[in-house]
Length: 581
Image 1 (cartoon, rainbow, N blue to C red):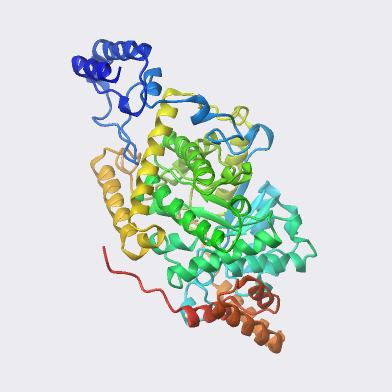
Image 2 (image 1 turned 135 degrees about the vertical axis):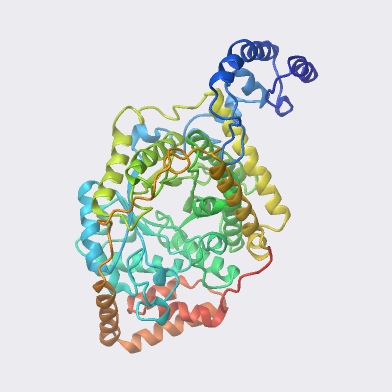
């Protein structure tokens, strides 16, 4: 049959799906012939007059046909039971839960933070009043890199791009009047300081008198991607990953309802990799973390439910849908077939997304529609936790008005137009199923290549990640420069960047206030208790024990972020980037 289809393809001189991927039915062969006739007689004459561009290729490199039919599903060997199944059941292509948004809609989230804690607290209260169900704290760069606000390395960066957090005292002010159990989830990135941000939220719950079981902390805590994609790495990669896993292990025993690790595709794709390759790199990172935790004696059914992933595709609407569906399917199969998972919770991957839409500096109000479309794609693909960019994010730290629009956009998608009324509404679409298969193959092929070259640490150590991302970024920029990738107001109807003078700016007094408060904390705390706690952190770090219990005690004593990280730097050394390319 395959040979027959190939012969038919040659006779018709038409590009068709690769039939080698699956069995082709006789009906499909007839349909292939009909499609070829349609292309020749109806499509081609019309396209010759009006087709918008010569090549239709997604950002991740998949060619898009003008039409998809049941023959495309036959060509990929599509099997409803094996490839789709039902929502909330293996292989979880259609969703990680049975009812998905028809039952409980995705968690409406806000990523916010600026200046120092008191000013930021007012912003958080406003966001919650508007309906934010999850607050993800944006930390400033000194905090993310383990420096206190009065460290020389923090100069001119305190409170920029996020709120400054140097000790538990800052967290108390940040969440003053906001009980941690009053919203569905709370969290932050903290990729290189995972055990510390985990301890800050754990100690804050104690201060508020709320048991850990009664609220949910959501951390990114994914240091491996920082080395190639974002740049807040502190330590060599191996001990950094060990510390991240310490935070996950602590949650297995103490807070299994928390989400202590969200393995991130977002920044890798944004850096140029493309969504499929970025997903493969992130999956390699996830395997590294999982292998570490399993080597400590935990079972995959204990560990896997605590890991989520942060998917990303911001250029092609339908690829976004397909990427999330393919990622859930790959995860489910890998958890069961590679690790022997038996519990649905270990195989059903929860996905966080950040709604983007290829925002531009030019006419930034247009970003509202771009972000809404990008977010809608994620929701149709079955995202569990959604937060989205603000339309002015390309210009500055988002202001209140743009944050309000971002929250309302999520609420409109969750409640209006019937977007959330049925589960996996695009499931069964010839195009979406073909695309899901294509994305899945891209991810698995790239993951195979990465594993063959040595896995997650080799991607960092040997410069593989930087090379792949740079090549992708150049390819992406060429597509924009040539006009092959249309971008309204940039390469179509180009406009000059339009940066409003009213863009939100950080209060310059915030850094001064933050440093003064930090110095007051140091003057008023019990120094003997701090010294004892930091000595315990040093002992746990040097011995290879899980550092989280000792870090929690240090945080309770008001030891600072910088004091704890300085111990790690002293024992593990600094990260020295490879110049290999």
